Figure (spheres, rainbow, N blue to C red):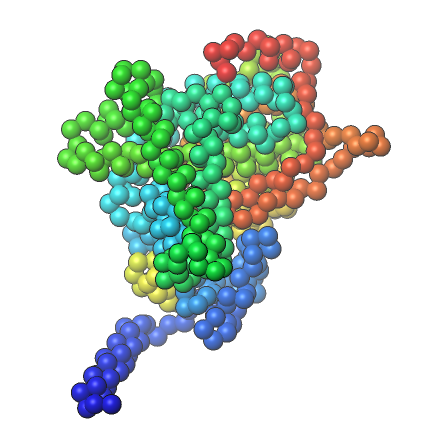
Length: 519
C-alpha cells in the first residue's frame, strides 16, 4: 500500500474514533430504560412478538417485571421505547410534543408504495402542519357537527342493509363507514361497496395493514433493498409495491378530481372538499402546494376513519352477543327516553348516559389500535433519570393504558357500568378511553370527533330497533362466539355467528318508515 493510502486510512480511522468519542462524551452518564437483555448486533430482534402473539401484553408484562412504566428494547441498532401508562405517555408525547412528533422512515409504505402523503405517517414538518390545520378547520369538536346529517343518513342505510342482508355484518359496517366518509369528504354517494372509489380505498387500507406490521418487509430494515428490480430472485415486494402504488395514487387523485369538476360546475354539495377550497384554496401563495395539501388531507380521511369505525362497531356487536344484560339495560334507557315511535338523534345524547357508556366501553375493551403508530424523538432527552437518545422510536401501548387495572377494575370484562355513578349519570372521575384510543399529542387523530359521532349514533339506533343475540346451531343450542380477533396494526373481531332481528312489529315499522332520501 502506498504511503499516501496509509496516511488516508489512518486519518479516516482517527476521524471515526474522534466522532465516536465525541458522541460518547455528549451522552449523559445515565442508563437507558430497563428491558430484556439483547444479543450482539441483533439486540432484542428475537424478543419482539408478532402481532398475533399479543405484543401489547408482553410489553405490559415487561413493565411489571422491571418495575418501570417505560421499557426499552433494541433491534438491529434501533432504539425502541414503549410507554405503558397514560402518565408517562402524556409526559413525553404531549407535554414534550415539540421533539416527540416525528415519524420513522417507512420505506415500503412511504417510499415504494407512495403513501408518503398520508397524514398519519408523514414526517413532522410544514406539509404535516398545513394538512393538520386544514383537517382541524372542518373536524374540530364544533365544526364537525355540520356533518351530522351525512352520519345520520349512512346510519339509516346500515339499518336497512341489516334488515335485507343480516348475514353480511362486516360488509354492512364497511358500507356505513364508506358512505359517511365519502359523502363528508367529497359529496360522493356510495350505493354499495362496489363503488370504484371504495374499491381503491379498500386496497390502500390493505396496503397499510400489511406494511405497518413490524417485520413484514425486510426493506424497512435494509432500505438499500428498495433498489432491487422486480425480476430479482426472491424479491416479491417490488411488484407488490408497484401494484399498491397505483391504488395509492388513485386514492389521492381520483375522488378529488371528480369533486373538483363538480365544484367548478357549481354542482358540488356541502362537503370538506368544498369547505377547503373556499377557505384555503382562494388566492393561495402557492396554488400547486395548496392543492396537494387539500388532496392529501382528504385522501387521508377515509384511511383514518373507515377501519376504526368498522372495528369499534364490530366489538360492539360481539359484546352485545356475549352480554345480553347490557343490551337489555340499554334498551330500557332508550325506551324511556326515545320510545318506539322514532329513532334517536344527537339531541337525545345528554339523556342517554348508558349508551355513551357502551360507546366508551366498546373502544376500550379491545382497542382498535393496541400499539400507537411510533413517534420518533428528534433530540436527546432525559425522563426520570433515563437517557432517551435522538432517533428513538417511542411506542404508546394503548392496550395497556386502556386495561390499567387501577383505572378499569376487571379490565377484560365488558362492563359499561364502570363509567357510571350510582345514580346512572356519567362518572367523570373514570378516565374516558378516548384520551388514549385516538393517539397522543400533536399526532392525535383529527377525525376522532367524527368517528365518535358515527359510532354513537349507530349504537343508539341499532339498539333502538334490533335485538342482537346468539345464533342457534343445527342441534338447537346457542352458539357462543369465541371472541377471537384479527390482530395486527388494526384489531377487529373475526366473523362470528349472531342473529339480528327487529325487536317488535312496531320497531320493524320504524325501519319501513325510513324515506329513501334519509338513507
